[in-house]
Structures are given as C-alpha cells and as structure tokens.
Image 1 (tube, helix red, strand yellow):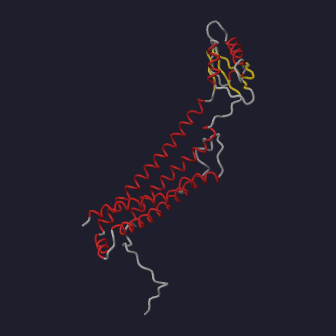
Image 2: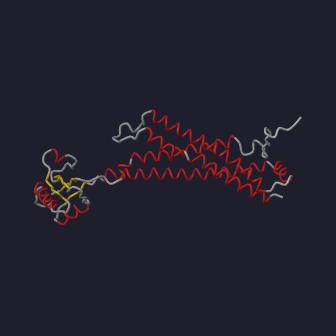
Image 3: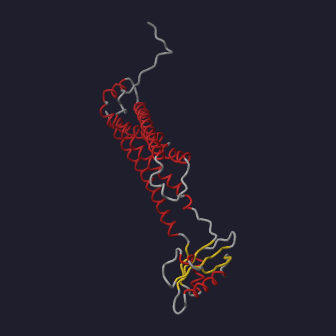
Length: 292
C-alpha cells in the first residue's frame, strides 16, 4: 500500500467539537440578526427623513399678526406688511383676506395672516422678520415649519442613536460570549492541550488554532444572522411597508431599500469573525500562560 501525496490531507489538530458548539453559533447568529435589523432600520429611517433633515428652499413665508391695544387686526396686518416689505431680501408682503387668512391661523378675531414673498435666490431668516416686526411694536409669529421638522429631526437622531447603541451592545456581548466560550473549550480540553504540548507545540500555535476555529464559527454565524435580517426586510417590503402607506412620504425604490439592508447586514460576518478570533486568542494565551 502506497501513500498518495496528492490525495493525503492532514487531520485537524483541534477536536472537531472545539469552538463549534450549537449554543455559541445560535448566540452569535441572534446577535448578528438583531444588530443587522437595528442598523438597517436606522439607515432606512434616515433615508426616509433626508428631505426633512436638510433646510428646505424658502421662497415665501407666512406671518401671523396679533392686534394689540386699540389697533384693529386689519390695521396691524397692514402695518406688518409694510414693515416686512422693507426687510432686505423681501420682494413683497400683503395681508391675506377671506379663507386664506384663516387657513392655518389661530381662530381668534384679533389675528390676521400676512404672506411674504422673497426675492429670487434670497434667503431671509425667520429671526430677521421677527426682529423687524418686534422693532415696529408688532406681536407676530413667523411660520418657519419648525413645529413639523423639529420633531422629525429629533426622531431621526433618536433612531440613529438607538441603532448605534444596539451596534455597540452587540459587539460587547459577542466579545464576552467568545471569550467565555474559548475559556470553556480550554478548561475542558486538557487532554488535547497536553498532547499538543507534548509534541512540542508552543502556546502561540495552540492559541492560533483556537483563533482560526472561532473566527470560522463567528463568520458562519454572522452570515446566517445577516441573511436572516435581509430576509426579514424583504418580507416587510413585500407587505407594502405597513405603517408607512398612509404617510405622505416619497418611499424609496426596492434597490434603495436593498442597499440600506445590505449596508446594515454586510459587516457582521467579518465583525463576528474578527471578534471571535481576537477574544479566543487572548483568552487562550492567558489561560495557557497560567497552566503548568
């Protein structure tokens, strides 16, 4: 019987079950799945709110004027229009009459609305309009849409911060799990550790073997979790974005959602492999140095 060198392959130096427990695999896959959902959802939410996060082009404004003293509401509105027309960058201002004057304005008899038009390309800060009205002794409120945009901005910031928190938490938990699993493998593997040492294997070689085993397990589990997250996003997409159908938003096309999901899920196989490798090597070297 002859040995065919082309077909001969050496067996693994580590036991097949070392670093391949089903519990470790499931825990890492679940972490990758939840983190992929959080990051992908945060990116998708930020994309939906992109138009709210940038300053909208301003070509006009609406000012609500409240009469004070003996002055009538119409007289206060006319005086406000005259004041606003003199602000730099304003092309004209005029009080609104009839239903247009009441639309969006407080239902009070002492208030009137004034429409302000800006010059082409001019940007006039609401604070400048309010300052000019206040200098003329007028009580007015400039509608800069902040009541609508500010809550949306805060919600987007909160969603991104929550996604970042889940990301950091998943990394920390996965590092702890990998370190504990590596210590458990070495604590139960005195026989094969002693065998490798008896044939001259250095501690660095044993730690490297465990590092590669945990890296492979982390990569496979991270890949499974990421694929499950992408599948969950695909199912959500096929249901027609429940909860968003009634909103007046420009929903992105399927490729845009796909890229947001991929951006949230793609890094996890690599991240889990790196974390598993680093924590397993560190735990192995510390335990082997303390071992007799």
